[in-house]
Image (tube, rainbow, N blue to C red; front, side, top):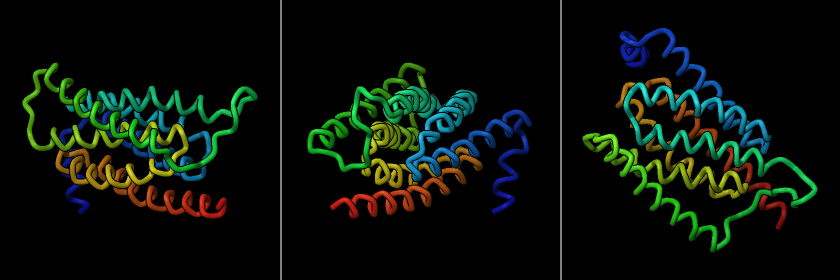
Length: 203
């Protein structure tokens, strides 16, 4: 296992290794703060996604890169939504309504189409990992929106997407990101159980 990670970084610059390490650390912090319903989920997540945009651009994974640009924008939106103010009620953990489920499905499908068009725009030869990337992009896009609304279903989508992302990043040679998403999976499961317990107490 150690050799697997080390071999992937033999021809990688020190700067890029540090960038991936920082994205790893900020990403873990972000999920931890999300579980705690702490607003710091967004500034730490924003730093992680911005660094990841750079890494994915360098690796020419334009679909993932485009989604991380969206995550950065969505982090700013979520940051705004989570800030308490007198003009709107405090955002509470809740379940999605039928309308939100429908909108989430529309977002999922629309995101896959947009991600595919991004690959076409960059004249990228699509292979199986790219189609998986398109699928996970749709999942993560919707998960980010649900998280901004504090919907418990965001964790269900993160768990599914993270489980797919782990082998995908490992295959691409991004070992640290693969490990990050493995940890994300565990943390997302714990967070889902925590939020579910909170909702059960409200009933």
